[in-house]
Image (cartoon, rainbow, N blue to C red; front, side):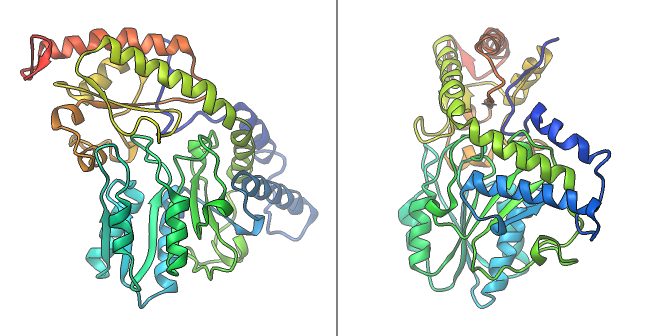
Length: 390
């Protein structure tokens, strides 16, 4: 059975070029990059090359790049560093549609450390309430942390605009750019952020490697304390092979940005048009313009998302009902609930997230599978009658 993979916001295929770059360091070049001998220095030089590639990808300086284990560690390291830098400040600002790596951490700080957390709401299109955000800023605010792009709907937040306001008030600003990376351009200098998180497995690098950008001049407080690695900002022997893979993946992602904004966007829009035309009671979740070029969140009235995914899976089609980090829950997505998407549509929402490996033929396979699948489920649904939701 042919696999049609459209769950790239959950994870991506490791690119062949990335694997090729990594292979020598899984075998003959196995030295420790911290060792003093020439054998180890060969590995260290390759890590320096990877660091430069990542820096070029986001327009940073190489010494502003800290390699971590994943996006979640990067997010946690950024937040803990900020609150350690300003222990007297007990207020944090975020949105109510963040990834669990942010939302769950803030709820933990709220319950265990007494922090006041402002969860800024979004409107029905998933766009941030900027007035509410600006009104919540105060002298007691330690950090503002907002995602660049939502992982479920693809909706974009105006990070550059918000970071400017934060900078004017002397508030640290962090953005989780995990979903944005490789899909839209990222320029940390233009954005004006203090810290930014990336994750390798979202851009065709291996799982288990992340990046935290730390703006030069910020007194960073290490999350993992150990040896001198990462200039003392993240202890532990370097994950050499994955770091090298991350560097190559960033180089490829930078080269493929135009493809994402043309070919991939066109495929996403083609799929969207086909599904809306052929399936009644379907609607798009999120703003139609301010979103990632690869992401389509679509709701189908009167059916369950889990049932849709099971029928798609039988035909080899991989999609998602939202974040992979919350896939164990049968409740509608917290993102869609925050957007006040009607329950009967939110519960029947699924996400297609494409990459440059996808084809138009695959979009037709999805459409030709999904149309009868939705009809089959609606024939059994007590909420659908005579071609409409009841």
